[in-house]
Image (cartoon, rainbow, N blue to C red; front, side, top):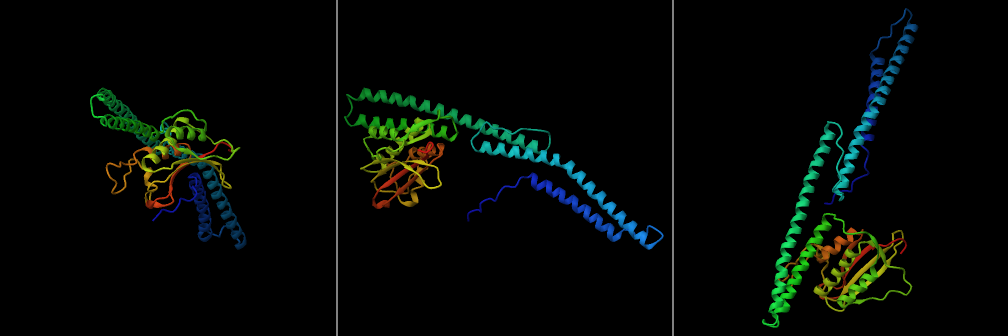
Length: 354
């Protein structure tokens, strides 16, 4: 059963301080009530004067209690405010770190429990940062160690071209190219996971990138309306190019011709404009139950043969790059496993009013 969405956040200050004030007022009121019920009334020789004197004394006592409550409340204000400000600063630091700012640390002030929690958070963040650094170093070293034998294999294949079976060399070249591409994708996925800086952001023309990658792969780009505004997004050109290339290569590997790339604008009422990049193919189709899972790394459906291979990291990188640019990636199939048109779509925020 899904959890209910959280309600609006109430500041800790406005939970603690009003409670303190209410408690002080209740103390004053209860003290006055107790005095009214149990206080003496004979304070003078006449019944009337004694009653009035007692009433005046009780009012004076109530005023003193309210004054004490006000003084305590004013004195508690900076104390409660300081505590809640430190807790709020700690919360913001934790949220920033969880959002990807891995260098963020909490300020450690004083020697109380809040300072202890902040110090514990900083220590845990330092340990996580060390683990991530070690992981990145391991990947970098592993990629180097993998590419060295791949290079030697490539040289050996070139030496065997004239002596070995004519079909042997192309097969080995394809396997080496696939291994080399896999190493590159693992490194890129790791850098995206760790929030590494992937280059300067700049206006990027998605239609131009799509046309270049389509020409490279020999697929078609759908025509756009004459006079259409620029298809620009703010992002890293190298990553966006890789995203479009992976979409095309996925269609070539798992789909079937004809394959088309479509770049269009989407202007929904009340929503910011977006650029939509869609790759259509006419392959066997993807059932609805698997359309979200194909973006998982190395996803392989049940019964999928070893020769057919998995979906690898290609679509997983597409989703990561889209999310890195504030967009999303989806899959839609018009005909399921029986055939039809399979469409992989990436939606990205457009620049300005594009």
